[in-house]
Every structure is written in C-alpha cells, then in structure tokens.
Image 1: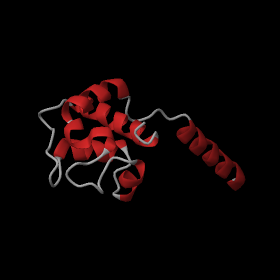
Image 2 (image 1 turned 60 degrees about the vertical axis):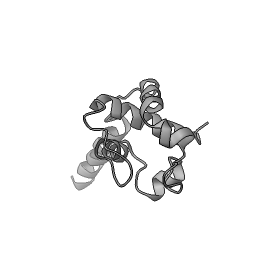
Image 3 (image 1 turned 45 degrees about the vertical axis):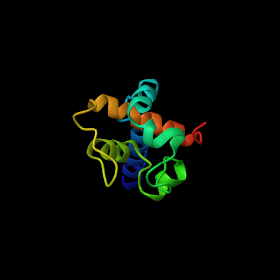
Image 4 (image 1 turned 180 degrees about the vertical axis):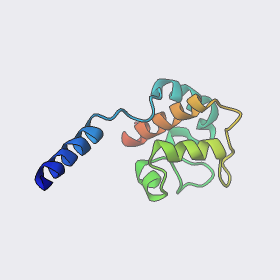
Length: 111
C-alpha cells in the first residue's frame, strides 16, 4: 500500500510540473516595443548606462537574483535605486511583456 501511494504521488508530481502552463502568457514582441520606448535609453542592447555591472545579461541577472519574470516585473513596477518605478506609467501587461522580452534577449546574449 505504501508503494502504491508513493508511485501515485510521484506520477501526480511529474504531471503537475511537466504539463503545467507558464504563469505568464506575455508577448515578447510587444515587450520589445515597450522596452524600446521606455527602457532602451538606459539599457540599450542589455547594458546599464548608470551602473555598468548591473546590466541585463543572463549572468548579471542571475548574480543579482533577477533572472525570473517575477523579479523583473517587481523591479520595473517598483523601481530601485537609480531606476524609476514604471507603475502607473505602464500597464501591468506591458511590464509582463517587457520581462518576457528581457529574459528572452538575455538567454540569447542580447543578439
């Protein structure tokens, strides 16, 4: 009985993670447009003109705990240090789109 329970638990866990839909259904194409209009002045090509080491490369995003849509959404929404908050300027959907775009570009080394 214990083995059946463990097998059943394992199967449920596998199906939960393997077939779970992503939390965000954001649009990277729309995100590119929003990024270009609102972010590129400081973050052109994934750089950071204000604080060079905190750029948008995958390595930097991972190093600073920003390599997730949730973290990027929080940063863009609320701002931090020299980065302004975009809450009120951008719609939540636009911020989600930007997060998707940034992660996609970081994964491709901004090429």
